[in-house]
Image 1 (cartoon, rainbow, N blue to C red):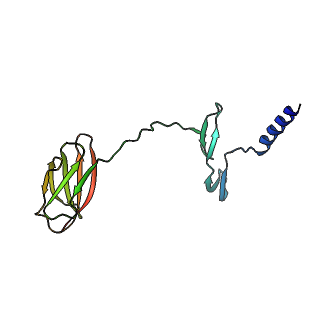
Image 2: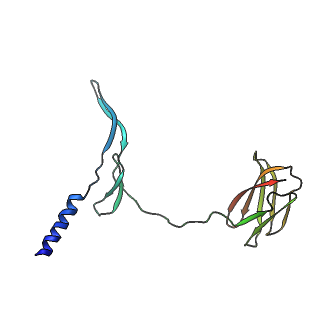
Image 3: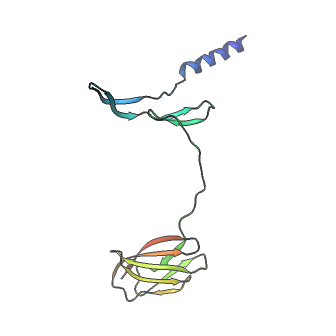
Length: 159
């Protein structure tokens, strides 16, 4: 008997503290205009957006203007968009080196800070890149892996 009393009190407690989410509009202003042939009523405000439950008890996103929308994750795969290449030395005087764990050829594009192309070439891992002809300053080095189409950008400085 005590078990049923405790169970009913717990059920009543959950019923008292449950909440429901309803569609509504929080309106900060609004008005109604009427003429001989028509009338228009409007409100300016924000819709209340919250999770709701459909007839099938699926969680949905609902708001004040549109019916609830079923949400479903299409893809949860995270693709690594960076390549693991280092440039050294930085700042440099005449040469830079591209180092990577992969032994493939990378495309190197060097741009000045105005976006003008000043150097372009294909280089292998630890191969010296001769850049003595560039004037002192800061440049952007873009390294691309042609196989995976991944690109990293680096700031390099010529002493």
